[in-house]
Image 1 (tube, rainbow, N blue to C red):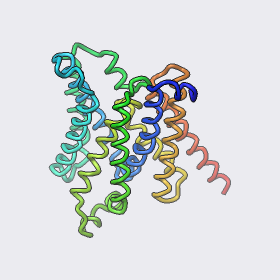
Image 2 (image 1 turned 180 degrees about the vertical axis):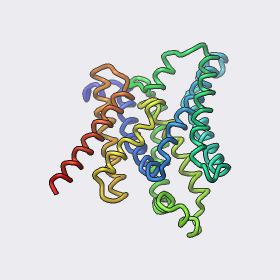
Image 3 (image 1 turned 135 degrees about the vertical axis):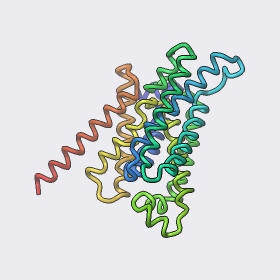
Image 4 (image 1 turned 30 degrees about the vertical axis):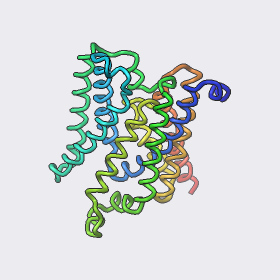
Length: 279
Protein backbone atom coordinates (compact mmCIF):
# COMPACT_ATOMS: atom_id res chain seq x y z
CA UNK A 1 0.00 0.00 0.00
CA UNK A 2 2.96 2.33 0.69
CA UNK A 3 3.95 2.32 -3.00
CA UNK A 4 0.33 2.81 -4.03
CA UNK A 5 -0.01 5.82 -1.70
CA UNK A 6 2.77 7.63 -3.58
CA UNK A 7 1.19 6.63 -6.89
CA UNK A 8 -2.52 7.36 -6.45
CA UNK A 9 -4.03 10.65 -5.29
CA UNK A 10 -7.19 9.08 -3.82
CA UNK A 11 -5.06 6.91 -1.49
CA UNK A 12 -3.06 9.96 -0.39
CA UNK A 13 -6.35 11.74 0.38
CA UNK A 14 -7.72 8.76 2.34
CA UNK A 15 -4.52 8.13 4.29
CA UNK A 16 -3.88 11.78 5.25
CA UNK A 17 -7.55 12.33 6.12
CA UNK A 18 -7.53 9.17 8.23
CA UNK A 19 -4.43 10.29 10.13
CA UNK A 20 -6.04 13.65 10.93
CA UNK A 21 -9.36 12.08 11.96
CA UNK A 22 -7.38 9.62 14.12
CA UNK A 23 -6.10 12.62 16.10
CA UNK A 24 -9.11 14.92 16.45
CA UNK A 25 -11.86 12.29 16.97
CA UNK A 26 -10.28 10.67 20.10
CA UNK A 27 -9.09 14.12 21.27
CA UNK A 28 -12.68 15.36 21.54
CA UNK A 29 -13.86 11.88 22.51
CA UNK A 30 -11.90 12.08 25.77
CA UNK A 31 -13.93 15.13 26.85
CA UNK A 32 -17.19 13.58 25.57
CA UNK A 33 -16.70 10.35 27.54
CA UNK A 34 -15.76 12.20 30.75
CA UNK A 35 -18.86 14.37 30.39
CA UNK A 36 -20.99 11.21 29.90
CA UNK A 37 -22.15 12.42 26.49
CA UNK A 38 -21.00 9.39 24.49
CA UNK A 39 -24.28 9.13 22.60
CA UNK A 40 -24.00 12.67 21.29
CA UNK A 41 -21.76 11.49 18.44
CA UNK A 42 -24.47 9.03 17.36
CA UNK A 43 -27.12 11.74 17.44
CA UNK A 44 -25.05 14.20 15.39
CA UNK A 45 -23.98 11.53 12.90
CA UNK A 46 -27.65 10.74 12.21
CA UNK A 47 -28.37 14.45 11.74
CA UNK A 48 -25.44 14.58 9.34
CA UNK A 49 -27.06 11.74 7.40
CA UNK A 50 -30.07 14.02 6.88
CA UNK A 51 -27.81 16.72 5.44
CA UNK A 52 -26.06 14.25 3.12
CA UNK A 53 -29.39 12.83 1.93
CA UNK A 54 -30.77 16.36 1.41
CA UNK A 55 -27.70 17.29 -0.63
CA UNK A 56 -27.97 14.16 -2.79
CA UNK A 57 -31.67 14.88 -3.33
CA UNK A 58 -30.94 18.47 -4.37
CA UNK A 59 -28.23 17.28 -6.77
CA UNK A 60 -30.62 14.76 -8.28
CA UNK A 61 -33.54 17.20 -8.59
CA UNK A 62 -31.89 20.48 -9.59
CA UNK A 63 -29.05 20.80 -12.08
CA UNK A 64 -27.76 23.90 -10.28
CA UNK A 65 -26.81 21.74 -7.26
CA UNK A 66 -24.89 19.10 -9.24
CA UNK A 67 -21.52 20.43 -8.09
CA UNK A 68 -22.52 20.74 -4.44
CA UNK A 69 -20.26 18.71 -2.12
CA UNK A 70 -22.64 16.74 0.21
CA UNK A 71 -20.12 17.25 3.00
CA UNK A 72 -21.01 20.96 3.23
CA UNK A 73 -24.74 20.43 3.78
CA UNK A 74 -24.00 17.50 6.10
CA UNK A 75 -21.78 19.79 8.12
CA UNK A 76 -24.45 22.48 8.21
CA UNK A 77 -27.04 20.00 9.48
CA UNK A 78 -24.58 18.64 12.05
CA UNK A 79 -23.81 22.10 13.46
CA UNK A 80 -27.55 22.93 13.52
CA UNK A 81 -28.17 19.63 15.34
CA UNK A 82 -25.52 20.48 17.93
CA UNK A 83 -27.20 23.86 18.56
CA UNK A 84 -30.60 22.16 18.94
CA UNK A 85 -29.13 19.68 21.44
CA UNK A 86 -27.69 22.52 23.49
CA UNK A 87 -31.04 24.33 23.36
CA UNK A 88 -32.97 21.22 24.45
CA UNK A 89 -30.51 20.59 27.28
CA UNK A 90 -31.48 24.02 28.62
CA UNK A 91 -35.21 23.34 28.14
CA UNK A 92 -35.03 19.97 29.95
CA UNK A 93 -32.63 21.04 32.72
CA UNK A 94 -33.42 18.08 34.97
CA UNK A 95 -33.51 15.53 32.12
CA UNK A 96 -30.69 16.82 29.88
CA UNK A 97 -29.94 13.40 28.41
CA UNK A 98 -33.39 13.53 26.76
CA UNK A 99 -32.02 15.99 24.19
CA UNK A 100 -29.86 13.32 22.54
CA UNK A 101 -32.56 10.73 21.63
CA UNK A 102 -34.83 13.57 20.44
CA UNK A 103 -32.21 14.84 17.98
CA UNK A 104 -31.14 11.29 17.04
CA UNK A 105 -34.72 10.32 16.21
CA UNK A 106 -35.33 13.54 14.32
CA UNK A 107 -32.10 13.13 12.34
CA UNK A 108 -32.77 9.56 11.22
CA UNK A 109 -36.43 10.37 10.51
CA UNK A 110 -35.68 13.35 8.27
CA UNK A 111 -32.83 11.41 6.63
CA UNK A 112 -35.13 8.51 5.73
CA UNK A 113 -37.67 10.95 4.22
CA UNK A 114 -34.98 12.54 2.01
CA UNK A 115 -33.70 9.10 0.99
CA UNK A 116 -37.24 8.03 0.07
CA UNK A 117 -37.76 11.22 -1.97
CA UNK A 118 -34.45 10.50 -3.75
CA UNK A 119 -35.85 7.08 -4.72
CA UNK A 120 -33.79 4.93 -2.37
CA UNK A 121 -30.10 4.27 -1.70
CA UNK A 122 -27.36 4.69 -4.24
CA UNK A 123 -23.60 4.07 -4.28
CA UNK A 124 -22.75 7.57 -3.03
CA UNK A 125 -24.94 7.27 0.05
CA UNK A 126 -23.58 3.79 0.83
CA UNK A 127 -20.04 5.18 0.93
CA UNK A 128 -21.17 7.86 3.36
CA UNK A 129 -22.82 5.28 5.63
CA UNK A 130 -19.83 2.96 5.97
CA UNK A 131 -16.87 4.98 4.66
CA UNK A 132 -14.81 4.46 1.52
CA UNK A 133 -11.11 4.63 0.71
CA UNK A 134 -11.81 5.92 -2.81
CA UNK A 135 -14.48 8.50 -1.84
CA UNK A 136 -12.16 11.08 -0.24
CA UNK A 137 -11.46 13.88 -2.71
CA UNK A 138 -8.71 16.49 -2.49
CA UNK A 139 -11.30 19.14 -1.51
CA UNK A 140 -12.50 16.81 1.30
CA UNK A 141 -8.89 16.54 2.51
CA UNK A 142 -8.51 20.35 2.58
CA UNK A 143 -11.77 20.60 4.52
CA UNK A 144 -10.61 18.02 7.09
CA UNK A 145 -7.26 19.85 7.43
CA UNK A 146 -9.20 23.06 8.18
CA UNK A 147 -11.38 21.30 10.76
CA UNK A 148 -8.31 19.70 12.39
CA UNK A 149 -6.55 23.07 12.70
CA UNK A 150 -9.64 24.68 14.28
CA UNK A 151 -10.22 21.78 16.71
CA UNK A 152 -6.60 21.45 17.86
CA UNK A 153 -6.23 25.24 18.26
CA UNK A 154 -9.45 25.59 20.29
CA UNK A 155 -8.73 22.59 22.53
CA UNK A 156 -5.20 23.89 23.17
CA UNK A 157 -6.37 27.42 23.98
CA UNK A 158 -9.41 26.34 26.05
CA UNK A 159 -7.92 23.18 27.61
CA UNK A 160 -8.14 24.34 31.24
CA UNK A 161 -11.71 25.62 30.82
CA UNK A 162 -12.86 22.44 29.04
CA UNK A 163 -11.13 20.30 31.67
CA UNK A 164 -12.91 22.12 34.51
CA UNK A 165 -16.25 22.05 32.68
CA UNK A 166 -15.92 18.31 32.05
CA UNK A 167 -15.13 17.30 35.62
CA UNK A 168 -17.08 19.85 37.69
CA UNK A 169 -19.67 21.92 35.85
CA UNK A 170 -21.10 23.50 39.01
CA UNK A 171 -17.67 24.68 40.17
CA UNK A 172 -16.87 26.05 36.72
CA UNK A 173 -20.08 28.11 36.87
CA UNK A 174 -19.22 29.35 40.36
CA UNK A 175 -15.73 30.26 39.12
CA UNK A 176 -17.24 32.67 36.61
CA UNK A 177 -16.57 30.64 33.47
CA UNK A 178 -18.86 31.32 30.52
CA UNK A 179 -20.14 27.74 30.57
CA UNK A 180 -22.87 28.41 28.02
CA UNK A 181 -20.39 29.71 25.45
CA UNK A 182 -17.97 26.84 26.22
CA UNK A 183 -20.75 24.27 25.77
CA UNK A 184 -21.65 25.86 22.46
CA UNK A 185 -18.06 25.90 21.16
CA UNK A 186 -17.54 22.30 22.22
CA UNK A 187 -20.75 21.12 20.57
CA UNK A 188 -19.98 22.94 17.31
CA UNK A 189 -16.44 21.54 16.97
CA UNK A 190 -17.79 18.07 17.82
CA UNK A 191 -20.31 18.47 15.00
CA UNK A 192 -17.55 19.53 12.60
CA UNK A 193 -15.38 16.50 13.50
CA UNK A 194 -18.29 14.10 13.02
CA UNK A 195 -19.16 15.60 9.64
CA UNK A 196 -15.50 15.52 8.56
CA UNK A 197 -15.04 11.90 9.69
CA UNK A 198 -17.86 10.42 7.65
CA UNK A 199 -15.84 9.98 4.43
CA UNK A 200 -13.41 7.62 6.15
CA UNK A 201 -15.33 5.96 8.97
CA UNK A 202 -18.90 6.42 7.75
CA UNK A 203 -21.90 8.05 9.40
CA UNK A 204 -23.06 4.92 11.20
CA UNK A 205 -19.63 4.13 12.70
CA UNK A 206 -18.06 7.52 13.42
CA UNK A 207 -19.04 7.54 17.10
CA UNK A 208 -16.91 4.42 17.66
CA UNK A 209 -13.73 6.33 16.74
CA UNK A 210 -14.61 8.94 19.37
CA UNK A 211 -15.28 6.44 22.16
CA UNK A 212 -13.45 3.09 21.66
CA UNK A 213 -9.86 4.52 21.72
CA UNK A 214 -10.81 6.53 24.82
CA UNK A 215 -12.29 3.45 26.50
CA UNK A 216 -9.05 1.55 25.79
CA UNK A 217 -6.90 4.43 27.08
CA UNK A 218 -8.91 4.74 30.30
CA UNK A 219 -7.96 1.16 31.23
CA UNK A 220 -4.22 1.87 31.26
CA UNK A 221 -3.76 5.66 31.62
CA UNK A 222 -2.88 7.52 34.78
CA UNK A 223 -4.56 10.89 34.62
CA UNK A 224 -6.57 12.81 32.04
CA UNK A 225 -3.67 14.09 29.94
CA UNK A 226 -2.29 10.57 29.58
CA UNK A 227 -5.77 9.40 28.62
CA UNK A 228 -5.87 11.96 25.81
CA UNK A 229 -2.40 11.03 24.54
CA UNK A 230 -3.09 7.29 24.60
CA UNK A 231 -6.51 7.82 23.00
CA UNK A 232 -4.89 9.61 20.08
CA UNK A 233 -2.19 6.91 19.78
CA UNK A 234 -4.82 4.14 19.82
CA UNK A 235 -6.96 6.10 17.35
CA UNK A 236 -4.02 6.42 14.95
CA UNK A 237 -3.20 2.70 15.22
CA UNK A 238 -6.86 1.80 14.56
CA UNK A 239 -7.08 4.09 11.53
CA UNK A 240 -3.81 2.89 9.96
CA UNK A 241 -4.58 -0.79 10.60
CA UNK A 242 -8.14 -0.27 9.35
CA UNK A 243 -7.08 1.49 6.14
CA UNK A 244 -4.45 -1.15 5.33
CA UNK A 245 -6.99 -3.95 5.97
CA UNK A 246 -9.62 -2.19 3.86
CA UNK A 247 -7.16 -1.72 0.99
CA UNK A 248 -5.87 -5.29 0.85
CA UNK A 249 -9.17 -7.05 1.67
CA UNK A 250 -11.37 -4.69 -0.41
CA UNK A 251 -13.61 -3.86 2.55
CA UNK A 252 -15.31 -0.68 3.78
CA UNK A 253 -12.74 1.20 5.95
CA UNK A 254 -15.39 2.09 8.54
CA UNK A 255 -15.82 -1.55 9.51
CA UNK A 256 -12.11 -2.40 9.58
CA UNK A 257 -11.30 0.71 11.67
CA UNK A 258 -14.00 -0.20 14.20
CA UNK A 259 -12.82 -3.83 14.42
CA UNK A 260 -9.23 -2.60 14.91
CA UNK A 261 -10.46 -0.29 17.70
CA UNK A 262 -12.25 -3.19 19.41
CA UNK A 263 -9.10 -5.35 19.24
CA UNK A 264 -7.11 -2.52 20.84
CA UNK A 265 -9.77 -2.20 23.55
CA UNK A 266 -9.70 -5.95 24.28
CA UNK A 267 -5.89 -5.86 24.42
CA UNK A 268 -5.91 -2.98 26.90
CA UNK A 269 -8.47 -4.76 29.10
CA UNK A 270 -6.36 -7.95 29.05
CA UNK A 271 -3.20 -5.94 29.80
CA UNK A 272 -4.86 -4.24 32.79
CA UNK A 273 -6.09 -7.60 34.09
CA UNK A 274 -2.59 -9.07 33.71
CA UNK A 275 -1.12 -6.09 35.60
CA UNK A 276 -3.64 -6.55 38.42
CA UNK A 277 -2.91 -10.28 38.71
CA UNK A 278 0.83 -9.61 39.03
CA UNK A 279 0.32 -7.43 42.11
